[in-house]
Amino acid sequence: MSISWSRIIPQSDGRVNQQGIDHYRRVLDALIEAGIKPVVTLYHWDLPQYLEDLGGWTNRDTALRMRDYTALLAQSLGERVDTWTSLNEPWCSAYLGYGSGAHAPGIHDPVKSL
Image (cartoon, rainbow, N blue to C red; front, top):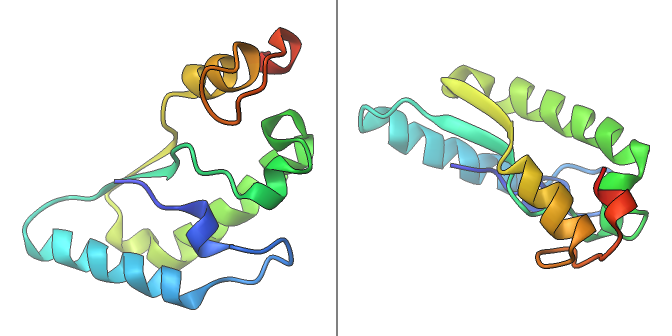
């Protein structure tokens, strides 16, 4: 499963949406109760718009914001997650999102895909 960054930190002020954390706690608890070991992806094509507006993955600050987001999730949900993955389809995010523009955010700039 993946967790929506935009649901957890919906605004640029960095405030945490506790309802989002609680939602994922319930989902993870249901998986565990069903005997499923949760495997969680931190980023699956849902970069918050406020970060995309600042350059998205081409802006180094986005990686730092992901560090903060990751630490928050590890602290809030870590005891429920068996395995963490960072990005789903990183090649697609980079090359199809920023190089060819075929996928979100739809930027056609091969240099930005590097």
